[in-house]
Structures are given as C-alpha cells and as structure tokens.
Length: 462
Ligand SMILES: *Cc1c(COP(=O)(O)O)cnc(C)c1O
Image (tube, rainbow, N blue to C red; front, side, top):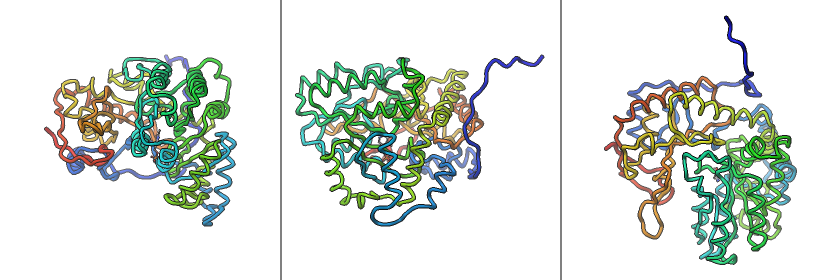
C-alpha cells in the first residue's frame, strides 16, 4: 500500500538556468593532489575539487536579476549610479545613513580598527573571527572573548550560543575601565562557534550595558540575515515579523557595521562600511582613498555594486534564507543517520564536524581537524576546511600554539549552488571516513607562514 503523505517538503524558490560542469576525479588523483597541496585544502586547485564546501565566501550563485544588473554597471570613476542605488538600499534595509563601499569585508575591518582602536585598548567580542581579530591586534588592540560558555561546549544545544556573557563583559569593564574599551565587537551567527546566533534580547541587554558605560557597539553584520532568520524561528515574539523588520531592529542597536558582501548578499566580491556616526564616517571616507579607491567605488566596479544592491533585496526574502538554512539542516539530519558527531544546534552557514571526537586518538598537536579535512577530500573530492589549532595560530607574546577547545572541520554551503543529491554524496563520504576513522593518522606541520597560517601552512602525513 502506498505510504500516506505526512508532510510537505520545502524546496528552493528558484530553478537552474545555467550550469557549470565540475570535474569527476579518482581517489588516485585526489591522493596526489592533496599531497601536493601539503594536506591543506586551501592549497588545492579548485579544478581538483568535486563538491566545494570550503567556504560560502563569494562562492554564491547570483540570480538572473543580479547578472543583468552587471550589464548596467556605471563604470564612472566618480559618482556611479550603482553606488547611489546601493547606498539607498543600505539606508533602507540596514538603516545606516552613512556608507562607504570596500572591496571586501576585511578592508572595512582594517579601516574601522585603525580609526577606533588606540594602542593598549581592549576589544571584547562574541568569539573571534580570523581577519577581524587580526585587524584589531594590528591596530594595537587586545581582543577579549566574552561569549557565553555554552559556545565552547559542542554538546550544548543552547538556541543562542552566539550570545555575549554580560557578566564577562561587566568584569572586563571593571578590570580595565570603560575608557580602555575601544568598542564592543559583535557578530552573528558566530562562525567559530559553529554558525550560532545571538538573540535580540541579548543584543538589547548588551546595548544597554554599553550605553550605561558610554562604550560603542559595532556589528560585524556579514551574516546578519542568517541571524535574523534564527531570531524569527527561535525567539519569542518574532515569528510574525519579516526578516527585513528583524534585520532593521537588530541594526538599530549598533553605532555602525562592517559587512563582507560575499556572504548574505550573494555576490562574488564586495564589502560595506556603514554607520550612523558622522565623525567615524568622515574618517573612513578619508582613509578609503588611500587603501581602496574613491569613496563612491571603494575598490569595486560599478557592476559589483549593482549586484550587491540587488543582493540586499533578495537576501531578506524569507523563502531564500529558509532554503539556505533548510539545506544545511538537511545535511545535518542525514549525518545523524550515521551518528557522525557535529556541533549542534545546526548553524547558519555550515556543518562543523567534531574532529576531536571523530579522531579522538590523534593529539591536538597532530592537527585532528586538518587531518579529517584532508581524509574527506581524498575519499570523495568534497572540500571542507580546518577550524581548530591551525586556524587559532600562535600567542603573539609567548609564540606557542593557541590551543582552542574546539577542533572542527567546517563544511560550508555556498548559497544557491549545490543540489540535494550533492549533499547526499557528501554525507555518504563523511560517514565512510567516520566508519574507518581508527586507521587515520595525524599530520605534522612543515611550513608555517607568519599570518593566518591556515591559509598557506603545509603538512606531511606522520
Ligand atoms: C568573511 C568574513 C569577514 C571578512 O570578510 P572578507 O570579505 O572575506 O574580507 C569578516 N567577518 C565575518 C563574520 C566574515 O564571515
């Protein structure tokens, strides 16, 4: 007898118009390729990758509206019409009156860090992000992690593991004084915690505490729409609000923001600096001409700004963000069938495999997450990345490795790129590596760059 239909699946609110062939490789090809890449998935040639879950940064599929926008790029050096359209949407959707485009998120991070941080300042934040923290340090600041403890606990199913721990923040203010705090740097969903969001209630409480102490509150709004989605589905009182309304409310608590447009905005390149503080805006406008270009293009072509402006309109569509996060949830639920350990709750942009649990026989000094990422690549050509001891770098004072609590392999989903069948193949491969995990040996590092070593570090099999 036919099975009774108990539920209706959701599906993507788009269909495929253009396809890009990908190369099918053999296990021999891949063993050679990863060896040549020093067992670092960042050093693989993209041609040698089958399903690329390295990052969702700039790897998105643009819509036909975005592509047609590329054709109406106004490539004037000054005052491009695409700039004004983008500015209009930044005011409308983010609620920030002042805006400067940048070529990527880190260019905005660089400027904001140089402008707001003085030597010896502290910059508390809800867990670090690689480029954010580095720019804060290069500006003379010290990053202090004030995220709630649950964020470091892979077993915790707290709905808002990206929340700031108010007590930690209060203690820091008491210890170093509010004057020594350049600003509170909030991000969400928190990448390093597994794509975990903060709640609106937490944001409001953080803003109140900052205001009482006259401390600025700034937002890495790169994934703000993903955070807004989680607020809608998980936080009381927001179910009926639109993504756009939630985004606007979130933004209202911040003095300013920076964004990597390569994420939420579903483009391939771009960054945003925006604020309601005119003085900071003027300072950034002065600085952008030195590092990026004139303040009406900031290192971007007019066509890129057009695609970003359209991307802002698409990113707040509920069905779009629902499909994005739904795909990641599907991936997680399939992994559950094979009991593969990963961080829960399922995050906003990626699945984070728990390499410490999966390869519990490999010590942290032999890079369990780096090892797991290369083994998955060898098995199927699925490319993920390490988020563990390699990414955490060294302590700038002692020169020793930082030992993060988490050893993760991040499998990140480019927006609107892969199908459910791709996901099934990735799941089968990971399950197979998991079942054969006892045979896997660790790695040793043979080359270590000074900055952001996870990008270019090289390894050898033990
Ligand atoms: C990607 C990202 C950045 C850096 O932006 P780029 O565009 O890669 O320079 C900063 N913060 C967060 C949260 C990001 O995801």
